[in-house]
Length: 314
Image (cartoon, rainbow, N blue to C red; front, side):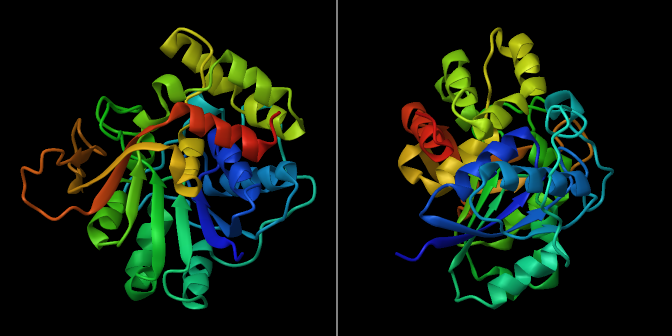
C-alpha cells in the first residue's frame, strides 16, 4: 500500500520532537521533508532539534530545510520557560551525524506540491504558521494542491496557554494564522490546546512507561523536563500536556478524535489583550460559511495507545 505523503512544518521544541518521532515510526505515512520555523526557538535551533529527533527515531531521514526566522510583522518571542532555551530541556541534545539540507524550506515545500499529484500531500504544522503564510503569498494556486493542512494551534473551545484567550502558536504570528484561516483550504484542521488536556495529559505512569521503553522514549521525556516542572506548579502534579503529539495523532490516527466540528473562524490581530485569539463561531451567529475544523477533544485511551505504539512502548 502506498504511504500517504506528509510535510512537517515545525518550530521543534520538546513536544514537537515526540510528534515527529511518532510520524516517522508510523508505516502508513511517509515524511517527505521537515521545514523549520521560528517559534519555541529560533528557526536554526528548530532545525537542529529536528535533526536530533530524526537520529533518535532511527528510521529514515527526510531532508530538513530552514524556513522563516521571524513572524510576519512582529518580533519573535521564544518559549524558554516552557521548553528551555534550546527547546529541548537544555540538556545538550544535538545531532551527531545529520546536517540541514540546502534550500529554502518554503520554496522546497512549494516544489514538492508542484511535483506531486493534486491533493496527494498533507502538511502538518506544529508551530507558528509563518512558513505556510509566506507560501500562500508566493504561490496560492500551488497551495490549493494541499490535501489537508492540520495545525497544532488555537485554544480550541477552551482557554489560551499564553494569554487568557490565545494559544502560543497562533499568538506568535497571528497575522500568518489570519492569512491561513482566510485562504479557503478544503481541509483546514486546527487541533486546539484543549485536545491535549484533562485525561489526554500524560500522567506519571505514562511518563515512566515511555521513558523506560528505549533511548527514544527517554529523549522524548527528558527533553520535556522544563515543561514537566512548569506543569507540576500549573496542574498540581507531574503531567505533560502534549499538544504537538495530540495534533499528530489527530492527523495520522483520526480514530482517536472525539470532537471535531467545522466552524467559521477568525483570528484577532488587533493590538490588545485578545491578540492571537481564534474566534470560533460555535453557534453560527455570523451566518458565514465554515472555514476550519476545530478538534477540541481526543479519546484519551486511543490517543495514548497511538503514542505508545508509534514510540515502541511495551
